[in-house]
Image (cartoon, rainbow over all chains, first blue to last red; front, side, top):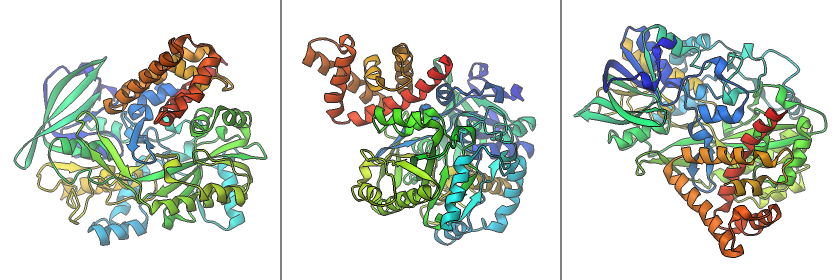
Length: 497
Length: 106
């Protein structure tokens, strides 16, 4: 397989030709690469990051983060409060550094997309065959029952006490997970089935070539046709520019990079005018008993009682690194206290389907600048999310909870101390991160859509999008499954008509 | 950067002086890799802090004693506008590296 994965120094020509150029190798790009190559097309995939084999992943979190995350995880969304956004930059994209959650698209979202965004032909029935294919290739399954995921088990107890709904989480390779607890930096056991282990090898076997260390910087166009793509090749501190000429281009650089490239290339004025995302609020929680959250995986159950309201609650990967980073807004005394109780603590996340919207600004040329405005409607939703999460955690046996609020005191019950923290809460004091950005180049037949129902950019004959940017709106759950299913559907239409 | 890292992590259980160079290098290298429109203001800000230290104490921050550094950081730096963002960035990145170094030591 590796013969088909090219290092930057192997790219000796200034011009390459192919039938299909796929830009990006994540959830959407890998689908495009595999489907096109297996249909006998001549395919080149360019990827800005590099390729790692399973044996290359280690438990050195700082090194792995620097190697496989864009900007080592430092990609701010500018606004009040600033939001830290993280995405993968490696062969396989964010599927290498996520939890491998593979949800089918919720029916309520498909209904909204059909009725409000004109997304016809993407019903549940239309997508089921694609989900079945994805689930088969990614070996999607549920975590086997063990006694190492106590942070998820305590949430089950809490839900049982409150009568709240929770569900086991389907994950890529979930059945084979051995709780290495390194999902965010690359699975060292190879259990997690990222697209780098599944779709990309299939694409390679069918003849696709993967060029690594290559970043698309401009699409050159003639009339309604994209002609060549200018690519910056980065190798050992050196940069040079090559060109790839192709009949078709599939853009799969993600919800930020794809509209940035379209803006810079003056392809579509609507691209990146809107970007939607999730808020992740993290709660460090201390329990009376040892839960040793570091021994389990990311999480095995998700609380979906308030899913229709846009709120999901779950555990998260737990290591001293993540614990301290979550508590970075507290002083060193708090961090020392919590580290002393390391085995008794866990890290939990409330994921909120934000109404706030961002936009991508390309004026700085070299990189996208993401600016967002905090929507006042998100304030009550966040307060509600904090209240519900705290309530659940106390019903799960929590003794003390550190809130994602700057300057707040840890709460010891869901009464007065929580109410005080919530009452005084100002949005600018929130500590928010995000790992899901989407909907910056929506598919559909509404006037704001960037692509038509075939995934083709309006006004162009040979540029398609298959990544998170085509989701019509904020989905409210991990989007990998939906990105892949929509990509399969687009490829199916493109190849078979 | 070494001085800022020292100020930030002094007092954290597990932090050792000998980690300082590696933590500072990791933080600086990460900031170097982010977009220029973020890294340029960050580095200007860091130099600005060094300049304030010289103005106030007539000597560079690097020659402050540990206690002086911590006092300067807590009483001056953290009261400057935008210092919260810089502090959070250094702490977040530093913590990521710190526990890898501690694990290697063990």
